[in-house]
Image (tube, rainbow, N blue to C red; front, side):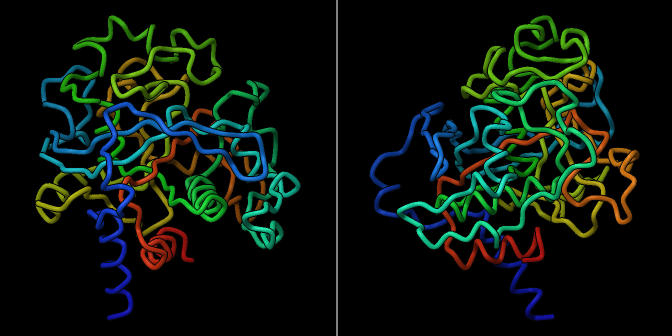
Length: 332
């Protein structure tokens, strides 16, 4: 019992403030400042934008058009600063993880053992459904697979990456705005910012083709929905506003396989699902055509509209804190 309690405390610490290193203390980035990360041993790189953290009102007001009951009650949340992927994770990035032959040792890590990495099993069918690979968002993976990618990337680069919590994701999406969208109080400009059901031609598109939000993040709404850390509970805001009141970056820690929460709407969703506060639970139907017993831990046969985006906490956790986090979300 005490051992389990210690794990939970360690994971709570993981998303709370850390002591700044000397390097971090030198200069605080500005909102939207970007950094680049190359995946070692490849020419694949990705950009991340600085999200300042702070307090905001999470959820939507009762009179917001298109609102669902699980978006309330509204409550104040505080999140720590982090870097977030400027784009959704693309197939260019994900395939380095997926394909053992691309995951090579480097001068910095000459003993890197690609065979020891937990990586996706072969999918039942093409997870792209012919919609595109290079420059397109990776899709159809489970939350487990997205988390394993984050763990692999953390070990590969020596920098801690993970999925955002719902609170972090919504903070980044809103970018200081309080309305349904980060661009307007209504959906009049949605065509300029999001690929959704009415303009997507029933497929996802290359990342970054629409306008970014004020934090410099592209496709936060539309294209593919994005996995978050949280287990989905319809009344989680009641839990977070009472039992977790005062916590920095509260999140609903997983206790069961389904459902988990995705955010941002997708190319297959209508305009209401493109709102910053919209929450979507994962479903067993996303594996409906998977004939395997048991069904794949890595792939969903029926969710080509779900991908993910990663964050890099500004205050990096210790190796021990990272290990406790992976133990919690992946079992090791």
